[in-house]
Structure formats: C-alpha cells, structure tokens
Image 1: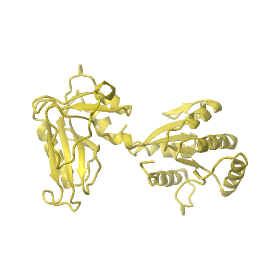
Image 2: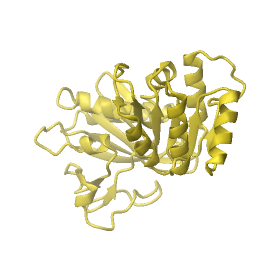
Image 3: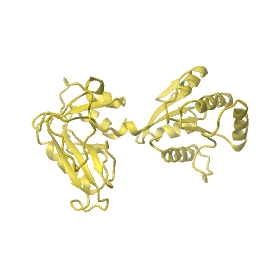
Image 4: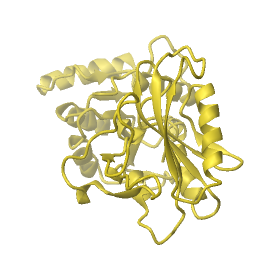
Amino acid sequence: MTEWLEALRAARGREPVALVTILSTEGSSPRAAGTRMTVTASDAAGTIGGGALELRATEQARAILAQPPGGWRVQDWPLGPLLGQCCGGQVRLLVEHVDPDPTRWDWTDHVARGEPVVAFFAGEAAPIHRVPAEHAEAGVQPPAPPRGPKPGEGTTFIEPDDRRAHRALMMFGAGHVGVAIAQRLPRLPFRLSWFDTRANRGFPGVSVQEEDALIACVADAEAGAAVLIFTHDHGLDYRLAAAALRSQAGFVGLIGSATKRARFLSRLAADGIDTARLTCPIGLAGIADKHPDVIAISVIAQLLTLDQNA
C-alpha cells in the first residue's frame, strides 16, 4: 500500500485528515499527475515534491482542516513566478478535508485494490462524491490541465492514481535475496506477488503453492510485468524461466552464475524459446558483492530503469 493511502486509512475517523492530489501538470514539474500526500495537524505522509510547492500545499491542507469535513479547493500553482522554483511548469492541486463519516462508501478500498474510482464535483459547497468506475456513466474525462477550466459543478473524471503506474512484480523464491528485496519494496512503484513452494518459509506475503501452480501463475503474467526467479531448485528455475519467456512479461530476471546462464540459454534455445528478454545474472553490471542486501538493492535499481510504460 502506498504511503499516502496507508496514512489516510489510519487517520480517517480518528483525527481530521486532508488529502492533497496533483490533478494535472503542464511543463516541468517535480511529480506527475496522480501523486498524493495526506496531511494532519501534526504530520504528513507521501510527497508531491518540489520543496516550496509541498510547503505551501501543506499549509493549505492544514487550513482546510479548520473547515467542515468534505470541503475542498482546487488550486493552480505556477512554479516559477509564484514559488520561485526552477521547474517553470504549472501544477493543479486538489486539497480536500476528507469526510470521516463511516457510513459513506469507502472509496479507499477500491484504490487499495488498484481499481479506478470516479469523482463527481457537485459544486464548491458540496463534498466530492466518488463511485466505482463501473457505476459511472460513459464519457468521464481526465482532469483538465492547469491552464484549462477548473473542476466545477457537474465535472466528473476518473481520479488520477499513481498506483496504476506501479509495475507488476512476480517474485519466485523466498530465500535470502527474495526477503531482502521484499523488505525494500513497500514505498517503491511495484505491485508484488511473491511465491514459493516451501511452506516453512513463514514470511508475510508469500503465497505457498505447488510447482505446477507456480508455472501457471507465471504463464499468466500481465503485459509488461517483471519476473524474478531465484528458487531453491534449478529445475524449477528452468520451468519458471521457460514459462515466463513464453508469457507477456516484459522482464525476466534469473539469479545465477555465468555457468548457469550458459546452460539455461542452451537448453532454452533447444526448446525453441526466445531468450531476448532473459536477464541473467540479475542486478546492475559492475556490482560484484553477492551479499543478499547488496543484490537486492542492485536488482531493484535495475527494475527502476525499466520503461514504466512497458
């Protein structure tokens, strides 16, 4: 769960909380549309970036906490002339005092599952109304850019959500490297699915399944997904790699030595499998240290270089 969403769900109903959303941007800006942060009277979680922009947005968020729950404002910020930032672009922010009413439909459940939500603006005096996207009428538009018209009564759009930019990551193996990677992922743009065949691993989030089930999972990888393979069994590693290379995965990473790489490439070629997407060994070139924590950081850095639109 992203930091802003975790903080919003923790604070809602316990203390007043404001949500700041970058609706849209033009030109150079510190963060993209959909980036969010939550603000309470004494704390903040997440970041919209930009130093001066975030400082002013935090001030505005705390000011709106003095207003009744459900209140909101849309603000356009020219980063250069108004805030003195070198970016020079413009950012449109939505600042809202989140309604803590527990009887209302909790749209954050949908967002936590990565499902789109539609926002309805009923006017400045009314709270923003949200519904699941499947319940909205067709023709919902994205937010207008900062130089376009501000949302007003009757405006609807699917909320920008930075979670949808998170790459699906399928990780096979709950050994030392797998654990080291998983420990570093919660604040990074990945949606982790973690698998192992060994029931005694005992790490939170690991799905323990039989080998054939793991092969079926990786064969069904979504387009552009990253697959990391480092199980305790080289035979299973091969089956997973072969299935992943036949799937729609965008990146297939296999832990191993030069010898393991050569043997796998030869066997895959004999089986008629295109190995162009296979990366073995995994991690950034030039980092020789094989400590699990070092490998984990190297692999995550490698994944972050992948095209986010893949």
